Amino acid sequence: ISLVLENLLQNYERSELPNHGKGEPTVVKTNILIRSMGPVSELDMDYSMDCYFRQSWRDSRLSYIGPIKALSLSIKMLERIWRPDTYFYNGKQSYVHTITVPNKLLRITQHGDILYSMRLTIKAKCPMQLHRFPMDRQSCPLILGSYAYPSHQLQYQWQSAVAVSFEPGMTLSQFDLMSSPQRNFTFRRREGEFSLLQVNFNLQRSAGYFLIQVYVPCILIVVLSWVSFWIHREATSDRVGLCITTVLTLSTISLDSRTDLPKVRYATALDWFLLMSFFYCIATLLEFAGVHYFTKVGSGEIPVDEEEWEDVG
Image (cartoon, rainbow, N blue to C red; front, side, top):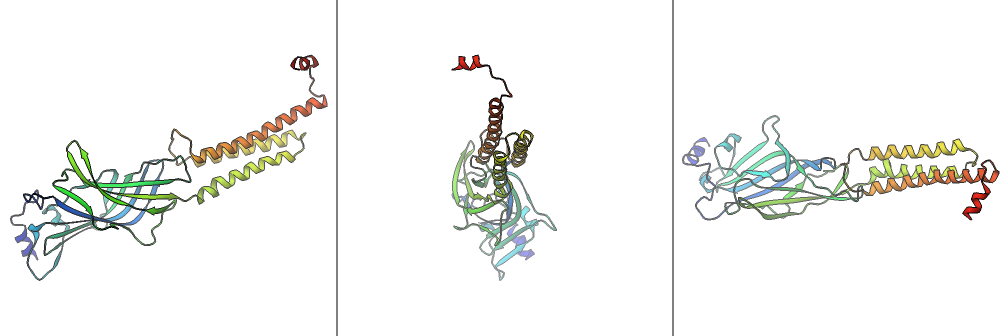
């Protein structure tokens, strides 16, 4: 094997693309197997995933004749052959796993077909619209392409119609993965047109957590505030204490529910729900204030100037 490799690399120029001088672009086929996904952060507008990222292309300069159909090579060979300069356009922080050794694989076939696989953890940007939070749907993209080679030199393609796959049993804590459509497109920059691949992870938020932690408690607290209607109207301290307690409890729930949310300039569906809960509790307090006042007036405890009433009339 060592002799075959030395013969292949004898006049090999790693800075040149495999199709250099042939008038056609080098095609890199890509597929991704996602092992786990999450967390999805609304506060930072990003998401993370652990995946096997695989690229394959043909380099006829590395074709050989021999009884071995495919060679599994050391990752040190990566420094001696050409490889695509793939990067993630919307990536924020990504790294290759290196325990216990760098998690990379390199394989070459007789025809010069190269498979380059590595295990990555990718953190990418995910712009979110939270108007319907927590009953919302989000679409988190992953965009990848070449950093330096324009599309007439290097083109990316998904390896198949289902080039993005998931390990069985993969779940997210707060979301359900609805679909993951993929597409190829070209993007024009000042340096030229570049071939890009994109996959969108369409996520539906699971509202169970918010039903248990926010919606049901708020509904029960509002209903509890209505108990003051059955308390005797002369029991001032009891009715006021109950109303104030419900308002303060709603304030605590409201602050806690927004801990992991960004300070957006618009109101979410959860904000409107909490606002209506506040309205019902405060309306209960105002109702008691009105009943208490007119009760005192009717009993004569609060003197009323008859001339003022005549002027009002």
